[in-house]
Length: 393
Image (tube, rainbow, N blue to C red; front, side):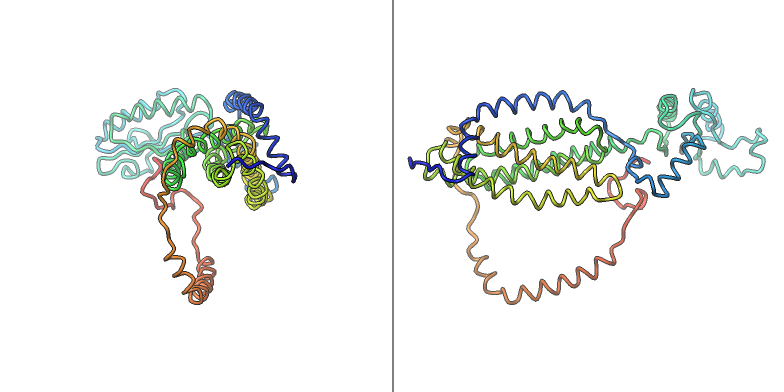
């Protein structure tokens, strides 16, 4: 420890500037976080993925024509089990009285409209099937109020409702991604606890990720609008990148800490990490930029948001993390612990010995992988997906 730093090299001069001005950077990040907190609620989230269809596609043209020429009223089907026919008739009448409901189809022998219909098409095995048509489109306020009242009406029965009127894909995806983010965070923190050199580094990693994610979400406001898909998955995808870059810099710092004081160590570590992390990020950025060339607009939406996420991850690691390391330097030293990662020298020796066998195996595996990839079946609708957790519809 106690070695002096030279002044040679562009990266060293940049690193010295960042470390020397760390308090100013902390203030700038604090202001940026305040802006992001204010901006996040203002971000327009588009929930209709058809908005991202190219104007020239048949689907987009067909949807435009349909919207211009026709009004698509909201509809739904309701199955009520363990109900008598007389009770079902009363339920149908009550449904028709709800404001926003245009028609309820259910077999009524006294109605001439059903003289060519069969009772079993509507009532069978003590179960009644109602088909509802609303007075307005699915997203109309009167329709949304009506479906709530319909659900309340049949809530006292054993009922099953199928409708897309109140189906909220955005909320459902956001809820699922929240669970995934929580699970991923637990796994990542557990791994970091096992592989860390000091417990304080985990706190620093979480702060760096939190700030980078907050800045990315806040600056989405400047883009005008984003899709609900990008809004839901963006933070989870950014998690791995921000943590990864932070780990590289911190481990560099711990290596240099063996030879320098804290401020000198983070300066040297930063000068070495900037080109390493920047070059590593280029492969990820190129993948996200490639998404922008998709005809389907979701690719452009996701690609630009995630490219921005990578840039903010880099900025927070390069400009904010050195300040955090210096701020918590004493806590870093106090929370050092022994290395929990076991030595795996035997595995390395084994891999070297069987290297002539593994290469042919990998080649054979690649050939089979190529063949099987062409036989992969794709699913294009929700109803064909086999999953232990199914949506209500």
